[in-house]
Length: 145
Image 1 (spheres, helix red, strand yellow):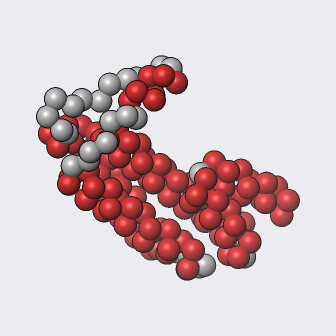
Image 2 (tube, one colour; image 1 turned 90 degrees about the vertical axis):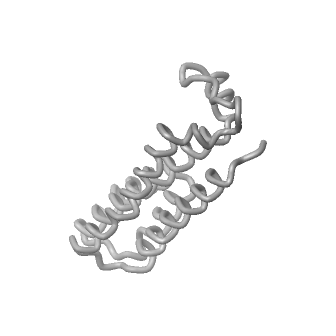
C-alpha cells in the first residue's frame, strides 16, 4: 500500500501533537484551568487535521484511488480501511478522542482529590487501549470513593 508524502507528514504531525499532550498529562500532576485551556491547542489541532484530511485530503490520494466501503457492516469497514487516507483519518480520530478521554480522567481525578500516581496506569491504558483505560479509571474511582 503506497502512501503519499502528505499522508506520511500528516501522520507524523498528528502523532507529534498527541505525544506532546500525553507527555504533559503524565508529567504534570497539578492541573489548573490554564493548563487545561493550553491543552485545547493540541486537541484543536488534531480536530483540524481530522477535518482537513477527511474533507480535503482527497486531492493527495493516488490518481484513480478513492476510499470504498461503508460503516454499515464489518466488510464495509474493512474495505474502507484498505485506503491509506481512511486509515489516517481513523488514526487521528483515535488520537483526538483518546486524548480527550485522558483529559477527562485527569480533570475528574483532580476534582476527586486523587493522587496523580493513582491514575497513571489508567492514563497509560487510555493512551494505548482507549476504552480499557477509561474502564480501569471508572473501576478505580468506584473503589476509591
